[in-house]
Picture 1 (cartoon, helix red, strand yellow):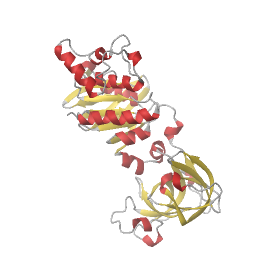
Picture 2: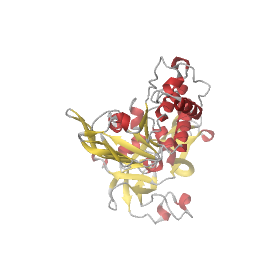
Picture 3: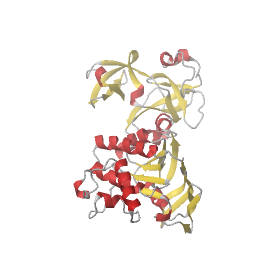
Length: 393
């Protein structure tokens, strides 16, 4: 098993800085996902790790070997790195067997290795087929087998499931990652699919503007984002204004007290905020607000739950998705809108009254310049995720 380490790496194309002092570690045998918008530097990072792009500063280490540093790069074929691209890039004139064994020397061991890899990825009955006879999922399995042929120390997955339909993408993704974990392969996955990153990875690296903005477990990235931008990029958010209260232990004034009773470790609760949605348990992200300070409050739609005695609202629209729905609500009496994610069996009717409560500590950030107005005129907005707004990564 081998650890991949990227240390203070910068890469430029002329005057454009593609990577700006990027550092990350992929622990030996783990799966780390890199997530970010188009142009954030993900592809440049993979190219630099693979040896297809030189670095201006910093270093890249595979195990105990420095494979990249300014003016001294080990050639790609000597790095011990396997690459699975988004487009399978199979040689169209070669059979499945020849594609898998392309980088292997001729001989009996080559045939044995091809058979072993084909069995590993479930293609042992297709070795004589040509690429144009394969489905998209089968072609990706061939690409994976080819990447594993030389027993690489590190495997790079460059949006390998992006061209597949949603059902196959998720099932094949889990199967491939399970296979790689079973081989203790150190894996770096680049994906534009936030659900894929949260589902498959041990750690998630969020990039923006050529820099790493947060690294954490999937739960940390989703439930404890460091900035409002990270929060909106990895999932849908509801943003409201609030006032910070230093009363984390005053449970009689906390709208979460029913959920927290008997729980010794209140996840993330370090204070309260007063909002249009009531008194909410809250966690300040990266700063310490003063008592009474105006703040920006960020919630996830699934943290808003039905409660008969909760804040009064009316159902405006329902976006049905089968297993659940996003229910748009008008908070009474102001009429401001929020959205709650409700399980499908419990959906209300449009126009019906609906009591809501918040059942997760709210995320608190410094108030934006345009949101510091008085709470006498509360502003509630729904912020769609940044990844929904970006069609490509």
